[in-house]
Length: 431
Image (tube, rainbow, N blue to C red; front, side):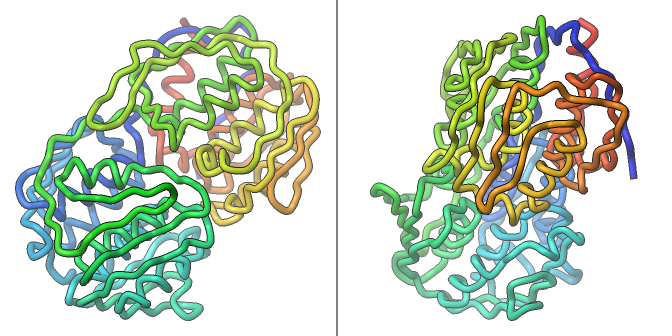
């Protein structure tokens, strides 16, 4: 286990950084390139552990993929170019890889087995496996197909009209990917709008998609054609430095080339609601995704209530929003966020336990948390990432405001989404 001691830094964070490529888009670019006919090139790929797991799985399925840092070349031969793997498909810590590849494997007439790390072994997969089985896939595993390892024998599927009980982009994407090879039409209706990277990128690869409010539909039998994909910076990674810039005195940080897809940009709305001084410049569309440069400055912050339809648009940012709330005046309430319980960790419990160690006034609720602020954070303690990249980064940012140094345990988990996180933090400290 790797540990990192973070020293307080009240002098201000200053400078410009380019955050790593978007994790969700990087996963999909490799997957869709593997399904497509022709070569797909990816620029700005995130070379984090999760996305490398996706590359490894598709290489085991017979796809030629070359990766050099942030550039990836996928030589796709279409669906028929995928082959039965001779080895188990190891998804590592990646829930996105697990759930989306289930949709793909369900359409393929061979047997495969998915396994992941200890964290993946605890995450619920029935939300994906049940609708896929209703389409005709044969899937089994621990707890009646809810937990990995999972065994899949795919084949001829039939389209379904699925009403999702939870707002989950991974569930939606898995069913739509299965629908690409299913007989007839497949529709997914969500309770609230989730990130739409799958829909945007499938259209870029030549797939026709119908959208009607919260319903997305796809006709079976469609083919993908190789593309050139430029991946924007990941707003979920940018969130940590947006919060740091708003909280740490005398700070001004510019983050370039950040994806601001409206289904992902809830963090920007919350920052504005809390009173943050945030500027958005150079807005443009890049590869079908909206992109901008973001500048944040030290701000006077107010507590807010966060809940309802905005939650799916910032679910991954809630750990760092909780840190931000400790420095806002008044009460911040985060609700309707039960989905936090089935992330890499139960993020309600882990955020509350670790921020409590730092002296925050925070307590858990059934569907979120309540934070009172502003509260000085104490140091001289050890906090844990719990093996969760976003908890690790949130604690490192919180430590910047502590009275004494804070040791963060398990910082190796941060490489999942932001391998250069501490390098970027040190650069902003020194400028």
